[in-house]
Length: 354
Image (tube, rainbow, N blue to C red; front, top):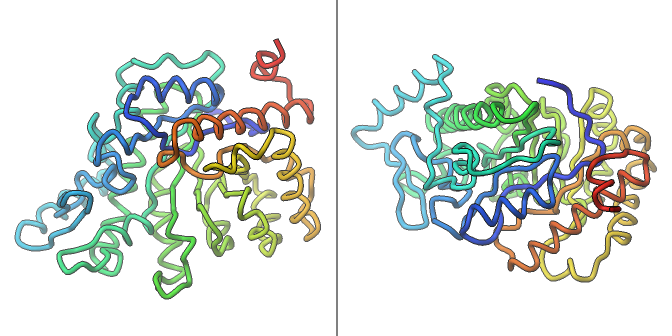
């Protein structure tokens, strides 16, 4: 695949409100024309919940209303064997997703979405192994990540899911971006998440190992950023509206990450009602304040400016449609202003000024 220069282009994080894939795609293509991503629609069906969406095919998984359970009773062993066989044969077809669990992705696959001619990459997403493994429980209500056998299966299962998705996106664009969504990492080190650093890194790297394009991680809150920056990720996605200061103590890790070609997706457009209190100008100012926190710790400004994307601060699926639209508008506006300010001419900037 061809290399990708971030150039303050914008991309979506994943979920949107509503139930209509066509309407969701229209919003995505309007606000993220260079790097669109297929929309998750959790309001459309329970199977589009971020955990249920990637559950199909996991050995022993059962859908219990809005909850997922794994039953390791009789019959689970052959299913585990089937997973490991697909893993050993590197067969991403095992990870296929259907229209019920991913209507937005299926619309794209079936040619119901016309991508703009200037698309530089397509973005996909998958729930990360830590968050998925802590949410899905076994028959004893214990998170499957605390079962050694199932924990290993989680990494392999999600690796195949991610690989299949990336393969489908790669057919339609010169580059792909696959983002792992890890909300539970905001609780890493607390009493509720008693996992070792090595296990977290190992699970993430297992999923990354199945990917050929760009790969990244999104964490919605504060975390030990050194863990994520020590993986082989290409893009670190943070909520820069609320948690930009949390990255500053890891300035040395950030510098090493940027020096090896890493990129940062700055989630500067807020979600919720506070988005109506902001303007593009105020968010650009806030973004530069986030840069300054790192520059004061020794991170070179020129590297930060050369390695930035713009995103919403968080996924938008739980937001009111009007607020989700406003957040997307703000994201797009910040992207255009950053490109204008730093001389990155683009079709997007030209279109906005016409």
